Length: 352
Image 1: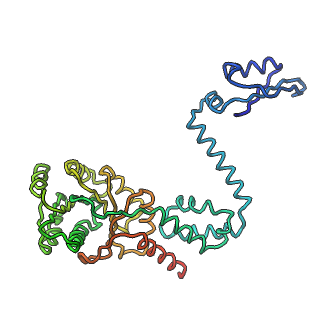
Image 2 (image 1 turned 180 degrees about the vertical axis):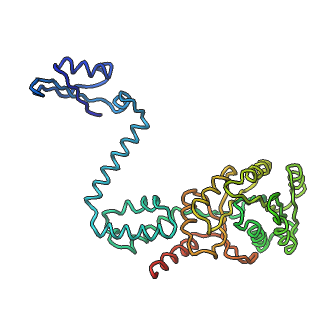
Image 3 (image 1 turned 30 degrees about the horizontal axis):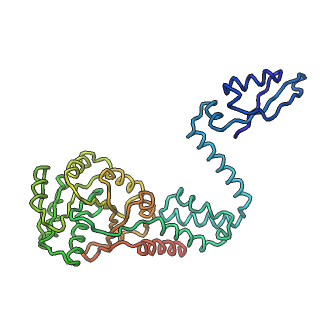
């Protein structure tokens, strides 16, 4: 319940103001009344109690706005409470930890949200202890795919230059090492834009003795999918695209809509900025993405951008690639691997 006051020359007029606003005495309760001098004149004041929904409706605020308002009030109260608990050392330690994490690629807002609960606690007195708690939060937030390859048809999408074709060859090799024969695997290449796209994957196909096809329209795609229906694994390469290659994206949509019972994997590079990673996700999220593969781990010292991306999208991570060798430089992703790389970055930053 909320309290509200009405002031008028007489108690009766003050009461009428409340009636005018809320329509009926049934909609509020008078809890106090008084008279006092104001500007050398007597005025009357009544105080009522009214439920929150009626109050916010009377001022033109809907329930959602009212809830937001209440949340903001609570946040302000919490901030005031925390300010009384925070010591100079707390502030210094928290800011130092935040600087390290943001500098290593994590998003400022995520770091702030994670650090907020530790304000005013003993943990905030120790930088290493606070870091260890945040690393636990990161580990909890990361999602790893339980089954890296769960269907016979796998579609690989992502921006230009991230290494999709090489990754497909690595996954073919990975599958062969686990018992699938080369003649039970096929490559389909849907890239009708990039010069040399077919040739790159064809090189690996010939070296691994894997059948390779290049459908250029939906009719051919349907033909090959029907012809290859007995294959145990069909790996499908698609056109790479920048965020602004709408024709290429639409081309991928056209093909993908006709591929049934397929797992779609988003391939992204660790060398990409967080903003570019999110742009790729937004471009291909219509495919109901199964998982993420991150490439070029060997080409960067910073993976905080990847961690931030995985946390924000909540996409499972299936594989990471660590070089150009096929199939050697492919690993099944684990939380331990990602955290070890990130902890190594933090340790290096301490030495700098």
